[in-house]
Length: 221
Image 1: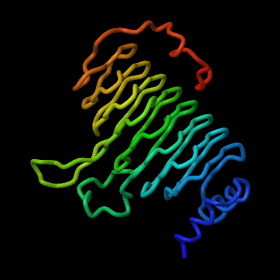
Image 2: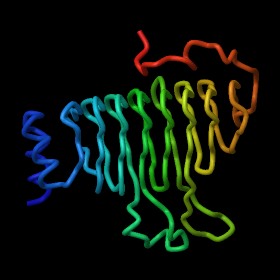
Image 3: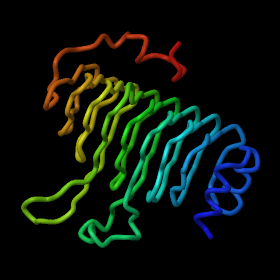
């Protein structure tokens, strides 16, 4: 019955759907926020002013999705997790949180796969651009022969090119660029740099005065 109820909710007009999600699912959804035709059911959802989720995206088995103001998730994204309440495979990680945190004015474009078995944090004014990128927080610990997970952190005012792979334990600093088709598998610290390659390394510097790094709106004409 709960499954059928969720299906019916998806098909309802947004105004009615929002009221049901707030009332019966205890979601916090600002009146100016919007979710399209999506299977979008984390345990907890917070959508601040003017945040939005486009059609055909899926979000399942997460503890939390928190979208700050003017943040967006585009069409046909697949966002998965493994909730902390089901710790069969991750009993050694008592502080693990299956969550996606998106800063204000940041955007995830379309057709990406984001594995939130552990925390994925995207800073403000950042873009997961293009198509087909994978953010993977969990894998197999070969030495211990068990499932393991590590968080991913994307800094503010960063730009992620198309078709990249970002592994758990990686971080990209504020004001950085990750080139298309790169593999990010470690923590970098230096801002205003271009990181690219397989695996990604620092390739060049970027002018701190670049307009992308100083814009006041996430949307780019």
